[in-house]
Length: 220
Image 1 (cartoon, one colour):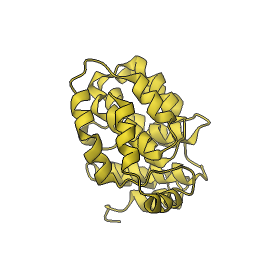
Image 2 (spheres, rainbow, N blue to C red):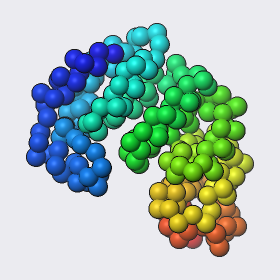
Image 3 (cartoon, one colour):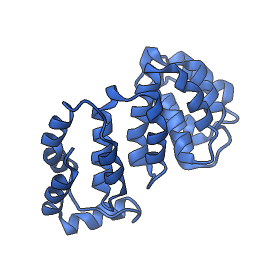
Image 4 (cartoon, rainbow, N blue to C red):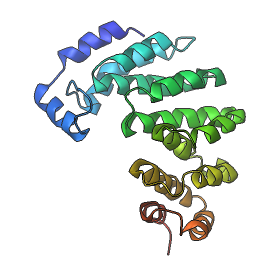
């Protein structure tokens, strides 16, 4: 993946005014080039097309782009990782964890949880790692653990899901309680009875935000 050439193209398409608004939306935590998502995907498309044919995952590219100051670069790295997901193996989890803990916020975390989820579905032995993440001091690793089964539908491991959520009951952290509500809402499209029963069982411990989000598609 030719990250240097791509970076030059990105810089040529920067928009200072838009960058101000994008930075403000992300609570002034990150610098932006000001490239909208549609334009960013257009610029990176030929690079990803070429990268798809490569036999291995370019971790040098991933790590270098994660270190760059522009948030768009972390988005591109996330897209690259999603593209190469089928080439990931359990030993890559530590590398993904390291990315998750650098410049963490919901935007990158909610991309990485899909990658981790796909990897854990292929390698169920990673469920133990996700249980450990569910009680980690980092709210972002816990959020990945909570939401890694999004979109699994009938392949959802409800025993694992219940334990991970139980490990996070009583939290006052917005991003944790939102994640619980999000995964419950997602799974309710597949198994509303399970979600309804779960909410009733733990309603005294679930945060109102989690109940509200998780009940969105339930007839309650």
